[in-house]
Each structure stands twice: as C-alpha cells, then as structure tokens.
Length: 273
Image (tube, rainbow, N blue to C red):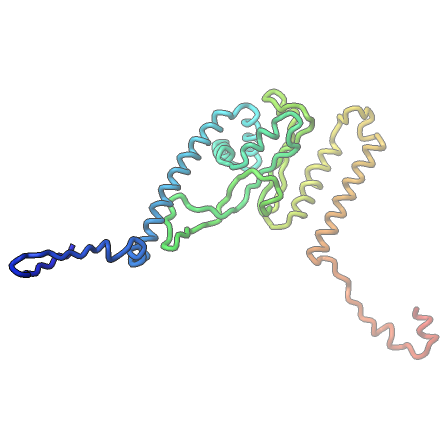
C-alpha cells in the first residue's frame, strides 16, 4: 500500500492505492516470468508421478501375492529361453499393464496363446530430469512385456505359450497343457525368423515324434506323412517368398549377339526359333 499524505485545512488525510486493485489476478499471471509457470507445472507433475508410482507399487505387490505354480512355470520357461533371471522376469510380469491376459490364458476355454516380446523400447530413465519444455530424455532399452501381437512392432524375440485343450490350467497340469516356444526377429526379418523356427525346431520335433495319439501307425500313417509333406512345402514357400521380398531372385544376363549376328533371312530366324 502506497500512502501519500496531504494537509487540507489543517486536516491530515491519507490516500491509499491498493496494488491488488490495480493489477488483477489474470494480469498478474501474465506478468510472471514463463520460467515460474514451467517450474510450477514441473512440481505438479512430479507430485503426480509420485502418486502414480505409489499406486503402481501397491498393484505390483497385489499381483506378486497372486503368483502360484502356474506363473512360476511361465517365469522359469521365459528365464531359460531369454537368458534372464527369474526375478527379472517376475518383476516385468507384475509391472505389465496386460497382466490380466495371464489369468485369461489360465481360465477354462481361455486364450489360446500368450505372447511376450523381448526387444528394445524407448524408456525414460528413473532419474531423468525434466527439460524446461517438459520433455525427457528417452533411450532404447531391452524390455520384456506381454502383447497381443497386433499393436506393437515386432523387432526382437517372441516367446509364446500355446494351450493344447480347453481345460482350466492348474499348477499340476500346466506342464502338460501348455507348450512353450520362441522365434527370433533381431535382424528385422520376421519371415526368416519364422522359417528358422519351423525348419530347425518344429519339423525335426514332429518327425521325431513317436506318439501320435489315436493314430497307431505313427509316422507310417499316410495322413501323418501328408501333413509333414505340407509343412515342408509351406517352409519352402516361405523361403521363396522371403527371397523374393529381398530381391534375391536374379535372372542371368545373357549375351544374345552370338545368336543373332548370323541371322540373314526369314529362314534363319525360323531355324533359330
């Protein structure tokens, strides 16, 4: 408050000017430096992140308490296949937004497949500081996550679990009812990864299979032989398609001068034809 005193007829009067009446709240915000507004938003976003981290920690502990023999079987297969520790795999699973897909996979008549990608993704460092514009530094890091297989680009390793029946998956039957497999796409070629998986893993396993269920003749059965032939043919088609995409089919360049240099009249052309 600025006070100015004036004497009028022996009386002392005070005139006050309120800064708040001269500058409104909106205009006051307008004259504040931009850095103050940014710092305020950073403080608020920091508090918001702390609250989200707190909620995420509670959720992770609730999921950790749900882990039983079925989950441990999946974790051990993933750890062995991807050369990771079981603790690392468990932490990745309970932190995943799609954790519920595991329960849907275990349920009777549940999901037929459960997919995991292990590949580079852009992740913010836990100790990364916000820039003045609110952005952060992100670096590619290896991450294991659950996926439906239709939303994220596949650039690394795919680990998958397949159900063999509609029975409920329990700790006692998980090793019999669930099959595990992997195929690789680290070189960026998914067709080559699938071709390698089928030709080097699946087909040898099928051809060495002794028990074919109700088919008593096993590999001698004509239907089994037709099936294996179809799989072999599919792998061959897959290989040809991959090579076509990679422009590996090249026609040999032929010098035709030696064939046409001596052609003089129509009869020569007929003979050459």
